[in-house]
Image (cartoon, rainbow, N blue to C red; front, side, top):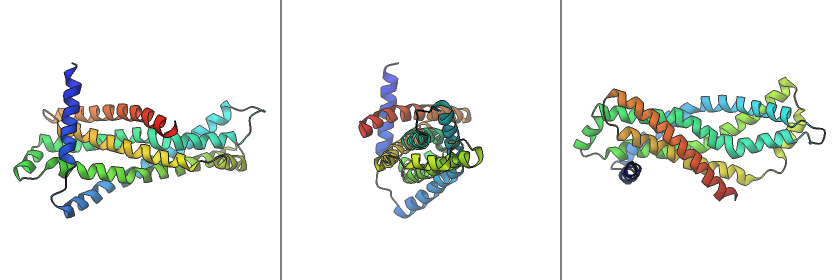
Length: 248
């Protein structure tokens, strides 16, 4: 039981060593890279915007209802909403959601290729399957994830304004002042840095579970589930460490 996690970590390191090598054909790599950016990133914009919009609206309502006090400045609602969106939701929580959507997709795709012996065929042809299949996914997700963070932040802020325009729970002027109050640019960079680390975790861990699958088609579903669970745990742990390092 003690040796299994060590063995798994060793296999993961070996796989990453094979993954991060110079591609044999750069033209093919860039083609795969662009395709993965569309598949993993651009196709996820919709769910990112939708979830962030409603979360921004709900956060604004909850804060207004729970900290309402004559002694509390009204702009605190906008200030708190901004801090939550910048520091945690748009980077950490959004990446947890993407681990379910993107991570399961990567694990099932590579796992299906393993089950149908396509990866074995690549090895027979002299192609490094780890580099050919995994490397473009990791680089593509690490490239596009900061843009998803930006979209998430703006969608959350628009959701907050939506509750003020149509819900009437707060004056728009107070919300706008709170969003601008004591703004620190470093918080945005913290979100970008954390999201890049989380993107690497999602892509590499999901690829590992798909690449090392054993069994038939049933094992593909198990590998997909395991990849989401492990990615989520590692994201939460990394969030704790990175927050302490970047904000401490």
